[in-house]
Length: 189
Image 1 (cartoon, one colour):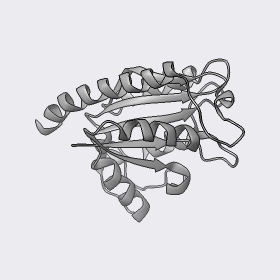
Image 2 (image 1 turned 90 degrees about the vertical axis):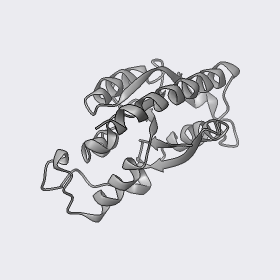
Image 3 (image 1 turned 30 degrees about the horizontal axis):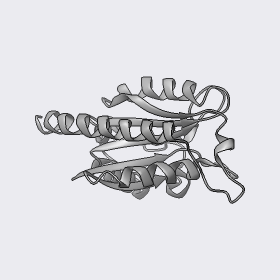
């Protein structure tokens, strides 16, 4: 079984990201090849990067960094759930990425984006480009929600159509395939 970490990136008050993150977590748990854990950056609450050493040295001073490192190190794969803010992904996600370096390496990453007319695809493209600098393999397969507020019903539940469900399962199938292959690469140090 592979450890899949789903990272919810929005931390602002009134955020809707947890609804999207909870939805993809439920879908991921249907895939029994993965041990799934949802990590909410609002709960983790990392301050702006303040470690005195470069992350590539893997010498951490603060407990919150050591805890974050341990969580990411144990992962075999990721799904990043991202909003689109000002044509990019949220700053707290960039901050969380930059706290670490080696812990991200040789792991596959799916992306679920949401936003207005662009469905968060500009955030997706920016994040996808940045993930490769951490030696991650961002997948082509993704899930994108345009005008995502229409997916939230009057009870505050996130409701999706069959196309989005199929896209999620396709992404998870490909995520498993890459995770298996990258596990071999990661172990070959």
